[in-house]
Image 1 (tube, one colour):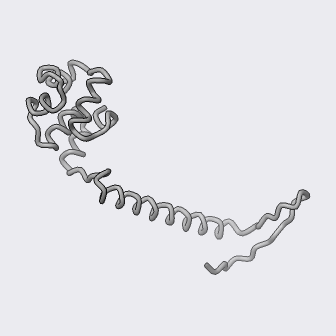
Image 2 (cartoon, rainbow, N blue to C red; image 1 turned 60 degrees about the vertical axis):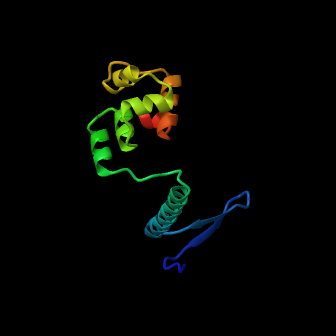
Image 3 (cartoon, rainbow, N blue to C red; image 1 turned 90 degrees about the vertical axis):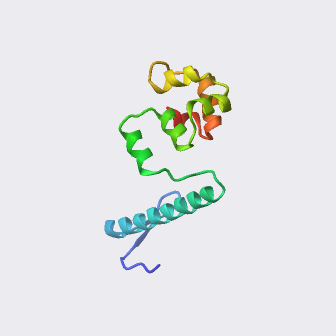
Length: 127
């Protein structure tokens, strides 16, 4: 990287060397750092996606989630499961799943964990 701005080096009384540069040059360097961090985040996401630790969600899922629709219901539908199938996979009774999806009950952490495991998501994804 070529520095176009004039810099100045100062030495503190305890011997620490400091570089002073124009604010515009500092801002340019910070943008480069942010770009590098963004690129690293993208590569990390790609690696997690390749090993199945991340997944893309369809727009209908995102829109309905933003609109406040029940996350358990969205994940169940996204996974292509009926309430009965989710009940069988999770060990949670179907009527209770229905009540959680309708917002009538919240479900304990243990229940949400069973449902999350059956849907291959985290508990945080459901709340």
